[in-house]
Length: 334
Image (tube, rainbow, N blue to C red; front, top):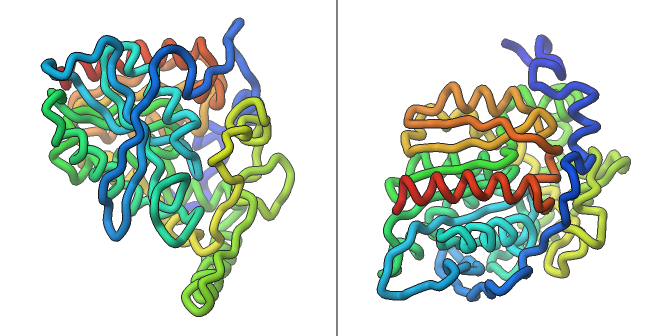
């Protein structure tokens, strides 16, 4: 199938789905944060690549250091930090008996990296592997897995396709990109090539001067933003936009690695037991169906109710997803 033959319907992005993407859609849900309740995460750090990762470790309620627990590394959306949806799911896993490590990828939040706000899917996959090594080194861990929300739903496929430490995988409202989808989102191959050129120029400027040129990561209407779509979660100061360590910035020099983000091409190499949770109101549901069809190991695709951002921080959809994800990890990693 060529890019010219692909429509919005091909990827499951009807006008209705776009509307659902931004609307809280489930009952009387409350907005969650990464710091609610009695579970206080521990801040840990470990080496990754040429730098280091800082993460929040959520120990299961009633943690006994003499016991062993299933443990997972958790990654969030494009440009996110550990205090956003990654930390929310970290706490939800701990409440359900699963140790969770919510990470700041390199170049974000408290983690190292000179190229701040730089999206690099391959480097993020390395960070997830480093997180698994950290978890596997702990005497209180029985097995290690990956949980990816939104963009990290795709990133975990990169890691799971290569890393034997991945004992199980779960994705929630995953963003599963491929070249044809990028061309659709960015309104054609010519526009994609312009972005590549902008990225190369920005990288040249960085290499010569150290300056990191940035644009907005998210905006509802600003056509210069990296993601132009309903962005209420990121623009709302009572939700993700109010997390102090998060910056609504995208490094322009990251356009090429971001455009080449292709978790679809990795799915057929993933053999670890995988649970996917998606909804018709989440991003590109047909991409989730495509991934599910390609996965090579035991797999389950659960269709939930809710809009995309509901799965970030709304108590109903998050709680339902967390119940299923934690049960999956207890069964496969316990």
